[in-house]
Image (cartoon, rainbow, N blue to C red; front, side, top):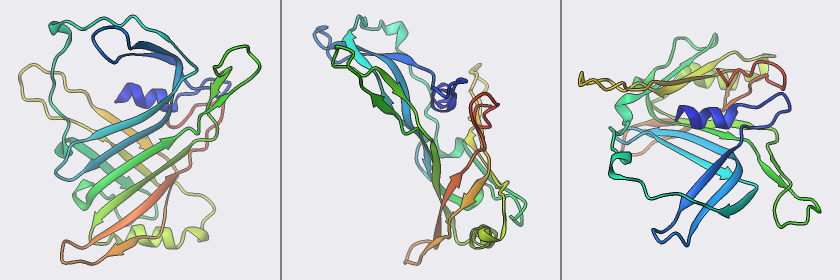
Length: 231
């Protein structure tokens, strides 16, 4: 998850994302084995729902395809590991206009989306393939579902027009507990700066009372400086 996140946010001094190749073997015969070259991550999504697993979805855009040479993995190369579940997830909301930090005990679902708005640029390069694949202005959004209503979140959204800047943050990720069997459980934790909340949506049913809040992270980052997301 950490490596995919880095691929999704890290840009060089020219504003380009890190490129990588993806090789896919669709069947064991080798007739459908391809390498997709100079790929970048277009969209990246982290999501977790109570009583469910933590998921990471990503969309890849590449320049071209060529025959691959991916071998069938041996039994020793294919292994299982513990699934990261909702009890491993960590979410914390903080900011000067919140009455207190809002932790996971108030949150039912959390979602973070990074959209790099990647586009293929074609030219008269004599081949049916893009000359370049490049990102444009990225968009960082998400949605949170709370148990009940969080008045300070609602007030921060309603009074956003009264302020020139926003310094609220969202810290999210996961921290699996080790069981003492010698495993080295990785920790994934990222901080999103300058978070602006939309006005809440309330739902009242025979089930638990919930409120849903969409949010936007607006990092002040450009090329040639430290990107606040790539830390």
